[in-house]
Amino acid sequence: MLITNIKGLVGVHPKNQLFLRGSELDQLPVLEKAWLLLENGLIKDFGLMSDLRTPEVNLEVVNAEGRFVFPSWCDSHTHIVFAAPREEEFALKIVGKTYEEIAAAGGGILNSAAKLQKATEDELFDSASIRLRDMIKQGTGAVEIKSGYGLTVESELKMLRVIKRLKAAFPIPIKATLLAAHAYPTAFKDNHQGYIDLIIHKLLPQVAAENLADYIDVFCEKGFFSLEETAQILSAAKQYGLLPKIHANQLSVSGAAELGVAHQAVSVDHLEETDDKVLTKLSTSNTIATLLPSCSFYINIPFANAKGLIENNAIVALASDYNPGSTPSGNMNFVVSLGCIKLKMTPQQAINAATLNGAAAMQIGHEMGSIAVGKKANLFITRPMTSLAYLPYSFGQSQIENVILNGDFYHA
Image (cartoon, rainbow, N blue to C red):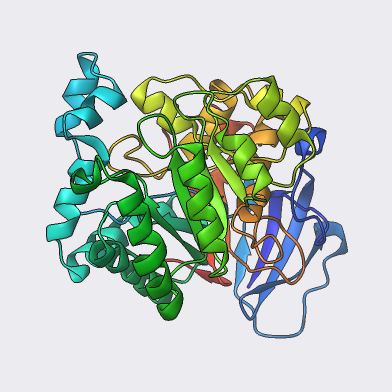
């Protein structure tokens, strides 16, 4: 496929640029009046229209006049395998019930776990497939999916097996994360160590035996998993080759981000509550600060300090946090808009955070996240737009005209 007359080819970073930190996020190279050649599912070449010499082979030629071509969004934090939505909690939030109050009353994660334990693997696969198709049509071309709504050995394995099926069925990179330490099941409410032992001695060996996960994640927060409990789980998972991620500092300044850095976590996610210690720790670490602004938007908690993180030289990514309780949307275009509107990121910063740094948070920056020769041809073409900033500016209205995955148009 040859795409011609591109108004702006976005994210033309050097191929060896695998992530951007601090002020580097300001740099979003855009090649104007460009062409892009795709071959065998990869980016073969690109350049200026003034220099185009059409190859003497049969090509599908696409005229992108007036349009921008972006690398696909890389959504590095989702929970899209779940049994049912939780709109019954929506009204409770509106009348002022907090996330913690709903959870304490048997809602929240435990609500999702009860429903998931009754669902079949096929039911979970079918419903997650619908969500994933929607995300792809909205420009997402790589995704991380977590377990965490099982909270039993059998149900956590069921979730991870569904994710494995999604990996095989969909034409995008998918990473799997074991998040059994999402909450304490009611049966272990007063026996935390008993549940941790279940994860360490029964679940982790089985996950490793079936090669079901790439990462381990823990919800490290007051009322959930303590610093000590989180460290114990991360250390055990390391023996099985699962790299750490942490739900950190969502509801309080807890020390979870610093713990993640100490364990060389791939990312610490949320960070709605930060202090100078967190900013300093992430300023010299390769642990990625993954921010989830649509979660803050939906449950009315503070937005993460993106500007402070960027000013302190952190690596910042944006992701959707798509889940049934606190972020029932996987629309990365809206996430990028919120990055600009609420996190006060520039369009360049937000787009870089949702593409190249999102890929880095899944360790796929060598194949995704930018326009570079040899990378996967996972892209989207916008409608005609006046400028790059128009995409985040026009929140709630899709500017995506066509999605290309592995060099071909995607038709769900």
